[in-house]
Image (cartoon, rainbow, N blue to C red; front, side, top):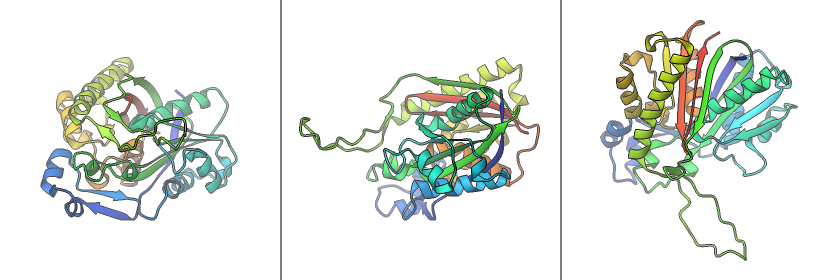
Length: 318
């Protein structure tokens, strides 16, 4: 492969919402949420836009990479929906940070970070660019049904960003999509077309939790086995399994199937909830800030999301 991460950052809203805060308007409890999801808090946008979060994450990543905005050759943003349908979030980030480069969004739901890494690898391998800014930003609070305790308690808002350049860290990637569109879905606005019978519908995120659980556990276990076999590695050779932070019970079930200690499966879902495609870069940023990832560490990254998309990769940290 062809890239390494040289800078990473995150953007988090100011408003922290605890499980107890949700009890004020939902028939739920801290114990009910925690035991089923592992989530204690999440951050929700009140005054911030997705662009605000993206700018903060991007600025941190560029600074840590010892670059300037003018050094960025391409911007790839992962989001299920930016502040606007058009222009893209990537173009808005480009304007905000005063970069001069192509910019576009990708939508692979929660797998978006891995999808963006592979796209970046292809661009760098082709010799078209040197430095790529990847921004994953999600505002799940605007898509959740806040009267449905089975879904709204899961999600949080945030952004994670990284700068990648030429290197040998990315050793393996695999992307897939099963085309199962009803397991997790979010309808678009219907507009006011006078030639269409526009019926009022709830335009909230819908999810079949039990089916997602089964899919995720099976998919991640399969991805890990396939990646390690292709790389000639054993499960024990992986320093950390950095998985999409969707639900602690999903991560625990995957860990039990693989049969490795808890320390190899870092989590931060108790602080942020499910931040969709931003969850892995936010976790990476925290681990790097805590000096938990060292040069030479082997990382297996895997995420799953609506579609049902799956992305996995192996990074040997440089």
